[in-house]
Length: 195
Image 1: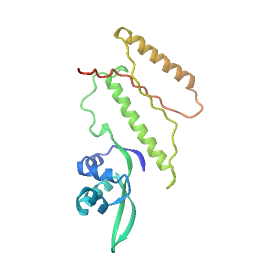
Image 2: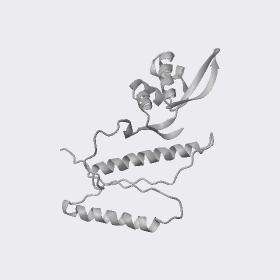
Image 3: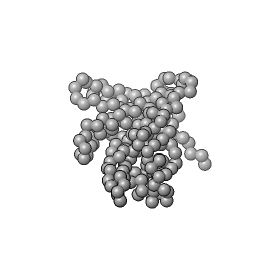
């Protein structure tokens, strides 16, 4: 089971974005049959199977076992990932972004889309290279989040300090040897509390 599945096909988004299917998908975090899911949702197995079939066709759910119950073949299904990310590319851009400089929100949005796609691809590669039944390896990664308060007259100085600190890291670790890591830093004003 993947940690995250990046959805970049419209048919995947259409299959997922139905309230009933999201409930079915949540229940399939553990392997279950349509009959078991139907009991939990107080639905008919046929109705649940309809939703499961759509999720399987969209590669959001996988058949993990087939068994015979009272002479009938029954499938046991499981969600293909713990979480799902919808690619912003599903909607696409409506017009051009007004500003493309590195201090614009448009650039920040582009960077976040890139990070989202990179992380999803990394998770997929790790899972594809993990033998069945084996636990996927934990990748050396780091996520840091915090809040910094900067007075308006110090904003430029802060941004310059941040840029210089990062440039120092790129200079010290920017050689051709060793494992490659991608560093993405997002700095944006926090929305003010409305009191």
